[in-house]
Image (cartoon, rainbow, N blue to C red; front, side, top):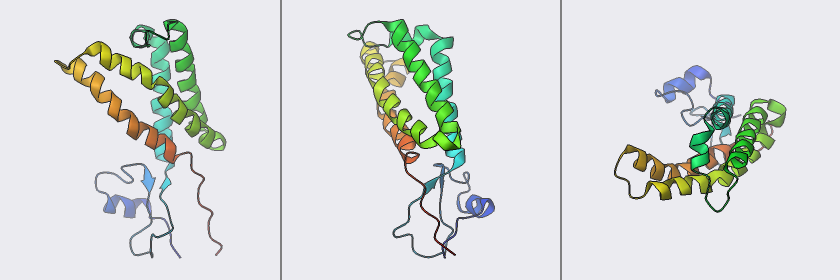
Length: 164
């Protein structure tokens, strides 16, 4: 019967850190992995919760940065930043609590997709990258894909434990 790797077994298999991608993997030699899927770890969920909550706090602590990248066509910069900051704080809180982690993950997916136009605006405003700030603005665009994927993994229900 397959079992999850212990922390020491995971660390030995992944010297860079157990579950580098925040996913618990079956222990080696425990049978076929066909039909099984990796389960996101609590550590990954907590990291995502902290990331989202931190982003939300920044919207209120330094609103000027976020207001600059609100798409021009949207307007209402202060309100958009406050609402997106509140959404990110809510994502973090929901992800952190075991009972609401899946709802929090879905909200995180939607929030990251919802703020994507601000990242596009930031890149457009930066123009052709000539300095570190310009490169960061453009590199943020493709980095949203792994962020969405990270949140998406946490939307999945945990597989049922087989009877013993």
